[in-house]
Image 1 (cartoon, rainbow, N blue to C red):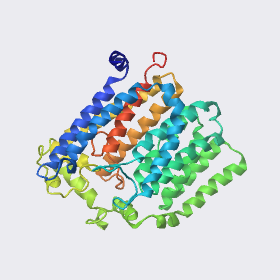
Image 2 (cartoon, rainbow, N blue to C red):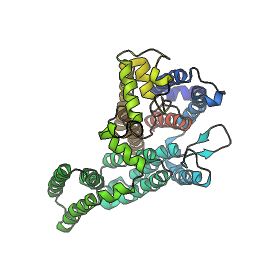
Image 3 (spheres, rainbow, N blue to C red):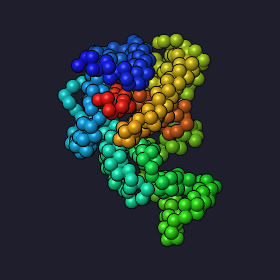
Image 4 (cartoon, helix red, strand yellow):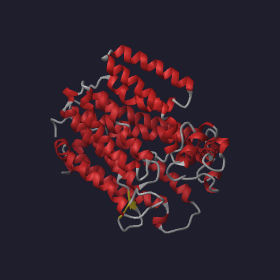
Length: 410
């Protein structure tokens, strides 16, 4: 058994687990700095809790790395159904932080099933697409994949957890493109969202309308479909004020303060302002481990998870952030390269989907901390505090390494 593990391990992309472990080490060092001077039991300090979760994460990595791909392919629909049940269970319990994201398992920590829904959805979608790839040139063939993704995303959105819901949705388009869906069909899926977003500025909306006309003209669909597509998106754009009113007040403030932080510097914009201040204060080489004033004077909020990169920037400087970006880039590019090289279509689609999840998490977390996008609670893979997410991340690494090996060998 041990010999088989090492033989399979040698044939896999070892660099991925090496990068993951290094990033986890950076996260633990940062969490230890954050906990300096704090009092509490072991399970009240994020460093020890994260260190504790690393053990089951590595055990899960080994187990998933050994599971044959035909077993994953065979039973994934059952896991998909079980996952739907799991993300519904929090609604039967009590609210935690005004949300229904966690399942109380009677321990000092909870279990967040939405983190596992991300990669389970990707594998289920990969099976469907790989089993029906010859049909993907028809737009109607995309209806079932869309439904498969919308069901868990809609449930998670109502917890409410907008960040995780978006991550569940994100792999759909790349996976459809990878399996051979027409670019025009993917354009039709993205068009409603773009119409809504551009409608808040008449010039951008006019430019978008011209782009739609050009794309529809080049695609040459039938006249009725062309007219209904164009005016349907225009109508959605006109409904933007109604959709804006459906957002909660704190969500509206997060979006508004993205463009003008001075609107609410002590409220919705506070996190972004403090994050920028922390990163800027670190300079090129940082203030040193445990020396971050924004961190240790508690000006920086959610510093253990969503804004941990701000702590790293303040204490270790821009050099450390650059190294992290480089490592994540290598990790993601390596994953996509494996997806391109693997012969099995099912495995290739899973790798594309998982690579997209990692890309979305990294982009949103970094962009959020420097004020490029509205604040949205998404942790940084391997680095941020979060037991469920750490466990889920190592399972995804195991899946990438496992499914990238030649299926003829195992």
